[in-house]
Image (tube, one colour):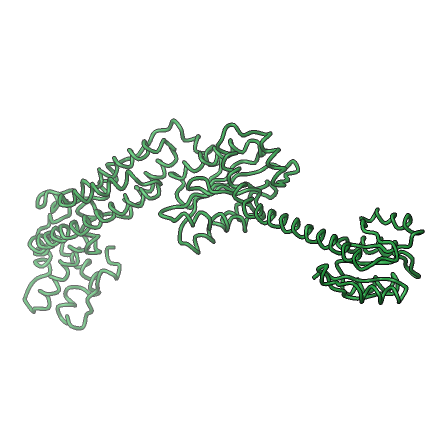
Length: 530
């Protein structure tokens, strides 16, 4: 039911119309009556009716003043004007406010009901139109984001789209740039992901990028267009927050390409720029933010050749020196990355190094090495290739270290046996043992001996000779000092022997022979002949 307010300053007319009109038959209900315009307007403010039936002539505020004031504040209210025969032309001036229904007094019930029915139909038609428009708007609001996404895809990939297309769609979508340039951001998801993850990236980006101009998914990428309105450092921080947020929720990393700033009509060129940036993900690694500056810096490496001593790395791996080998591999990949060769050329360098390394492994792991080689050729970043090469090299280096350790221990044990057997030989030296007994490089043997025993070869020999001298002196055997010196390889220089003994033990050989248990035996940490 539509509410009706009846206004007339004559009580008889007011009461008569109220009683005789079948309000329900017209689809209405009488919500109230008023004696003048002022009283009516107050009632309208409290409870706005749908229809007002008002007399023209009234004290305080007449019907025309009431129409003017109500129409200004409540434009949806409809009016039926009541007037006498002489007032009809005056009443028609209300047409400027949209009033189209006039009844001459006295009027009967049928006339009023008919006028009410016409207004009710007008109200219903207005409501139908309003509902249609609202439904249309809601439908457009639902479909508009998809239309925008499709337009963006076409605009950056279809060569037929140009500046005029932007003018049309920019106005259609109410996309205002006011002369500002734009930047394009492309997000690439790393590893395995579901299609829904693309929309998650898009939603996070839209939230953190301060109302982007347009956004869409293009293939397996997410594309966002933003106005160029903040410093690059702040923009980089926002992009980093998008990556961190998505990684935190979904455990999937993002590689991001950011274009230069330019006019929107050059969006297709900017889009190609971002795709070129993503190609350098092979060198810069997953999870990077790549800009055109990174591509420019890469051009500086063109024309250079890879200079790497592969043999030195192999020797380090054979020796089991993983720290040195690891640093060498890092240098290799650093040089390879700086060249910025095409991806297949870079992979060929990495394959060559990988094959040289796996040849050091046990023959039984050939099948595993081939599987790893296949995986290497399919990897999408130099970082992942480096990780694989280092993991294989580390395993080989540790294996070589254990083999060398067992081998070296046997050599050092043999050196100690030779020293024990030839302790009295005055020619006993590192060179003598290395060249005449073991047929090895003396320098290498000395380093090996020091590494495993913690003592220099010469110090070890002196310690053994002094220890043997102390044993003989403590045994109580009647032996002269010069004889002891000769037995222990000091030749005919007993005085030097005594000096060495005293420096090492703390007393002369004669003093030691008298009270051996009272003299403490020094060790190598006391600094003697270090």
